[in-house]
Length: 429
Image 1 (cartoon, rainbow, N blue to C red):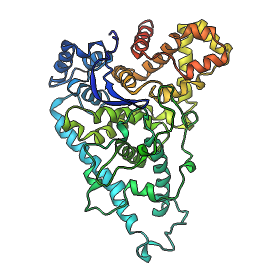
Image 2: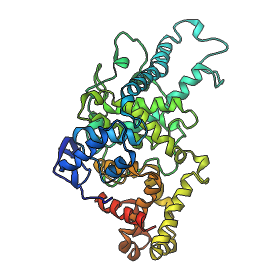
Image 3: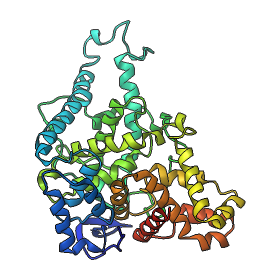
Image 4: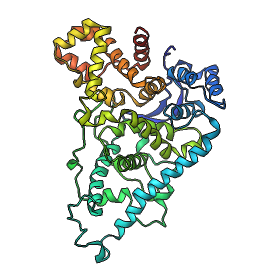
């Protein structure tokens, strides 16, 4: 299963990086323009029952952008779509209607209730009033949700600042939310009207807050980029905000933790740029369910109380070092000697699936391989190990400060070289 080099001559969608207008180049692999390879994907995907192992084998080397192949493959690999093609239409219709129901129950109906709260004296009673400490109070629930919403809003507005996509208006705004017949407090209005400060939210994770990426713009974005679109329009970041808010409401045990925005971003971007308008129209619902399925596999990383368990992030960081010890003892001993702990760099790598270490097209290419691998997050450990071994000479020569800078500002940008090395490590077991 070779990992081929990426093509850089395929224009797909508008792309802005470091203030320069250009095109987002599709990053799958050398075969992206190879009609035979595209035909291989099409042959697998047109079968009545998808051959999963064959699809994984093809996808591991990079999924072409043409014809929405990546969008479809990701939905299968993330267990949103079953292997039986005949059931796709009914399942998609059911799931998309379910998501609409979530919107009604968790945004529209509470928004209507809030719009009416305080209008009559019955809304403020001895049992239920804005200062009621009872956790079951609807006022208490509203204020608690606002805290989560404000943190989500803060994070999604700055999602991938090196491209303009998330600031642009979506072609398919949510009609349920924008329906002028619905007079309710939208998430947009809640953010605008609340006086709570997002700094009061304490559900961040050590190492995730204020993370910066050397490949992303660190300069503050112009105010115009943070302006809310006019009435009747929605920016893509608002769609992502809604997805994360619904997820937080449905999963109160974990709710929202900073970093989840970096996980949902590449998923939504991929589905919202699908060349098939019918699929693109439902990008929000499809992203929600794929994100939910992905989080089911990695949610333990976001739960601090599980850090030191076998399913926690600390164990996985140590696993990166134990793998490095098996593959490159000299480099392992050097990092140990300098007291460079995996928490200093691998926390972010593992927690966010490398989404902050590379540009978005390269993140998407890495995720092709991660989603395709049967033991996808064991392979992520190997990718992290490969990233270390590929800069071993610099690390062996460097002092603590130099090496920390290398690990927190990773120098290699050719992700296919990294994936190839990871595959070699996997095959050498």
